[in-house]
Amino acid sequence: MTYFDCFNGDADGICALTQLRLNHKVDSVLVTGVKRDINLLSKIVDRVESGDVVTVLDVSMDKNKQELLTILGQGAHVFYCDHHYTGDLPNHPNLVSLVNIAPNVCTSLLINQHLNSAYLRWAVVGTYGDNLAKSAIELAKKSELTPAHLKVLQKLGVYLNYNGYGASIDDLFFDPADLFRRTSLYKSPDEFMREDERTYKILEAGYHADMRQAVETPAESISDSAAVYILPDTTWARRVSGVFGNELANRAPDRAHAVVTEKDADHYLISVRAPLNNKQGADEVCRQFASGGGRAAAAGINELPKQQLAHFIDVLSSYYA
Image (tube, rainbow, N blue to C red; front, side, top):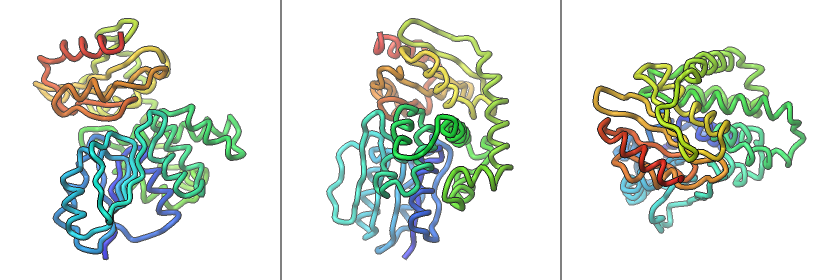
């Protein structure tokens, strides 16, 4: 029997799996990638055999549906935990699903509930990483965490999330699989930051260096309802696109934001954040374009033809007007 752990390479995916494997340690095949690399089941569909155990965390079931059905048909057991759009949920005796697409929920929160808060601080980190500050603060009420301590955990969540963005693993400071191997050695994020200070410092320094460049970028388009920023085709811009969008959303919570990054000569990569005070519709906006998807509060388009940018801006602004 082989264990496969498939998880999103962002803070939520890493912290969700960290909780699970601290609770039940197994020698598993790790399947992950950059945050946008969500067709994870396609990487293992030809390797899974009857009796294998597949865990899937923080990736859209809708985007992996055919591979999921194939894996179930091959006799594997699947535990699927996520907060993205699912489409029709399969009914299969070998599938255990824990899915909640509410805008204030993330996978780390769901795993925390599943494990009865056994590793609550890791759940707080993952929740902050998904830019769900209110949910993280509410979760922390079940512990003795102080506001000052929460700020520390929030920074770690942001840094772990930041590391997941890029066009390829080469853009990242750490392969998410390697980052998980490091976090899962420690029962709490405090131990991780103390004992693996070098990893923490690399993430911290990279985040601040990239954000300094991002915040100097003027808006391409801005209104009361939406703002759009265009970043160049550079490594730092690809790394910072997600956390820059979160920062913009936090600064102007009544406005939707899109961070548009040049992908190549003909295409853009787009990251959308719904207004923090109206966490809905980001997925609906992005699904109007080929390669678009995500969840209500945060979504994206993997490859938008440049000639469609003006149309995208119109759709975004009109939706939130």
